[in-house]
Length: 207
Image 1 (tube, helix red, strand yellow):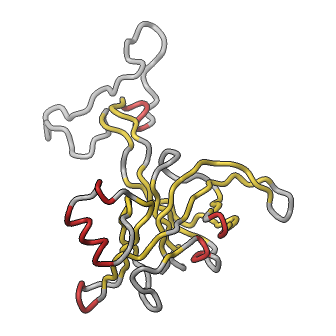
Image 2 (cartoon, helix red, strand yellow; image 1 turned 30 degrees about the vertical axis):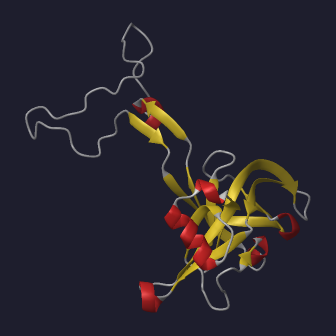
Image 3 (cartoon, helix red, strand yellow; image 1 turned 135 degrees about the horizontal axis):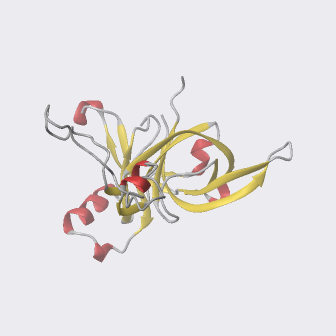
């Protein structure tokens, strides 16, 4: 398993070998420094903690400053754990986009765009009521409960509420290009979240 922290830069288009235009999302993948190693003996699982984007030390709490000093690395703004195989990886090592050069597909974890409080038509795709004869039911939810039995609203009923701003995983996105010298990875299709959002790239599990 391979993993890396990145930043979504935006979308563009490139052409493949056959001359077909491919929509891609540009991810700034790394460089990430290994801050901590999790082992099965000490922590019960195998993983590494990666740091991404430099941060001024005075903006960190004392425990965070001590965490980076113990690792002997510069302070980082983003810390994430990825289930990376720790063999051959040491604290202080820098991982770049070249880590995925032999990987064809990745899973991307990101936070989707927040839409605020939305009605059922936008949030769940309800068709709405009739648009004629003064129905006044154009975008309303309609009846939500039972009459006599069980005389309550079931849990999970699709209703208005907070939309978006949730952790989303998009699986099996194809890697179109890797520009290791620029720390860029071009993924086919779209990636959740706004431009500038932090994402986690993981090697897609083989089926």
